[in-house]
Length: 195
Image 1 (cartoon, rainbow, N blue to C red):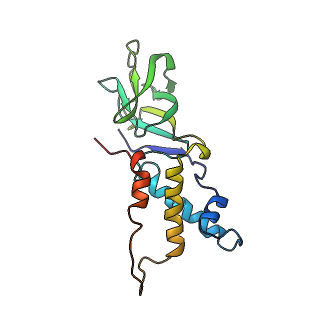
Image 2 (cartoon, helix red, strand yellow):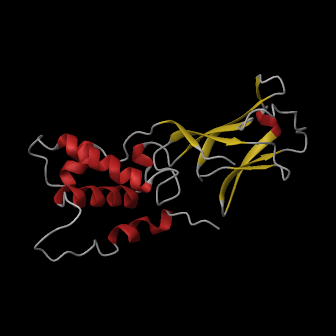
Image 3 (cartoon, one colour):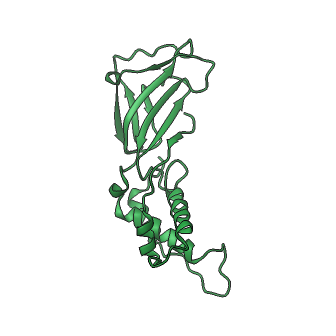
């Protein structure tokens, strides 16, 4: 399994109005760009392949590539909460083919989502010159921004406003304390831990 590739960026989980209210910055626009950047940074910290949640927050399109057909008939996907799964492959002549969705199903277990190729699937020959002859495209995430759990939205806002108030890596002259497990406590129920 190769590293997954995001093929479309998600919408922001937290709107500019929401973050401005949380930062008590609703009455001026000077910092709108900065607040937007901080929301994206906080979201990136939590979201997707490199995020600490190990899952996607707002629906976004991804592609997971594989070097061959699996012996166990399962194509493991890197995230839970997947939809719109399409399985494609490059045949021996390097022509892209699509596997009929009647020949597979999308399932979930404790490790996340996976595509199970059905009994009627006869693995066709692949172009062995490619590192990615089997490709699974899918959408992952909770849905639209309004479907994101409130705890995750609050965690994003807490991180962004913390960075807004503390713009340097080190605070000099003040007693510094981390946000006391607040962000960790908010995201804990949604965090995927590798098995």
